[in-house]
Length: 451
Image (cartoon, rainbow, N blue to C red; front, side):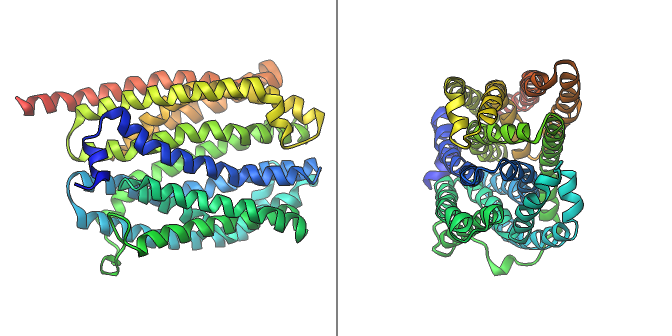
């Protein structure tokens, strides 16, 4: 038995969660550097407006990843279920169609992004001092969207078969390339903000090439094949059924980010710069829970396909415990070293003061959000995205955005930065209750079958 299949089907739950989650988390932590490195080197220009522009442009990266998630998450969910049900040909057909959809969707996004670039940059909340820099960054991101989207989606498809190590190597390779290229394009070539975007795109290209090398060398369980090139309506439906709700979830997150930036911009563009730096540092904590939850997703999908529902509950409990403990360590580090961490990216005393206060408020939500992420990923993994989508509706539209507006109105900037921890606590409780109730139904069927 392939060791990747053994991990998903028989390994002890805690070990399985760690084996699948840690490589994904390591890769994602390196991916944080894509934007953190941009922020760091742009900060060396000592221009707060360019620093703010990188933060204004961040939702565009989120949009690209969200659209890539249609293929990445939708395809990965169906592949894992096929593997659990021992449908190898169906899994390889899904993988091949996933590659085709990545290419087609990136072409559409590039065309639309460049056509609507000016109104889009205005929508992001920019002012006259940051509009040009933000437009430069966004334009390059749209031109290179095929690499950014491909890097994210193919990494997800690799993880669906348990090849988390290969996924990690690709992400790390792309990040190292970005670190090397950033100072060359920003300073040596004098391209500043635009140079940072070019380096990011090229870094993603390196990641894609590494992934393709693994497939070409037949290091993976599944392989894309020309014999599966014909688009299959049933497979596309399976991909879209999970992928589109997941993408809408990301779009709602981006909408909340735009609302947040616009509210912060009312205080000053310096405040946006400080919040942007705090958000970039928070990415380390965010990618820990996202990486571990993403590692759990193929475990849950595989065992759902194999109808091993009791193992799913054990994996869920193990995942929640592991993620929470990891995030408590991160919260302690952020709380103690907040001013020093913000100071790595700017010398402005005002940005450091506001950024440290913001980071200490934001970090609280890390304790709660990991549990919610596991629940959402589980529903996506088992082909029930409507539940994951419902959680996102509650989280972003019913709780977070109203909390932002209400807390900002009641307590000013302090209210703005504590809105997310408040909504995440409520959402965590609701999510865990929902998944627990859902699994009980399948566990009852499993016990009846055993009898």
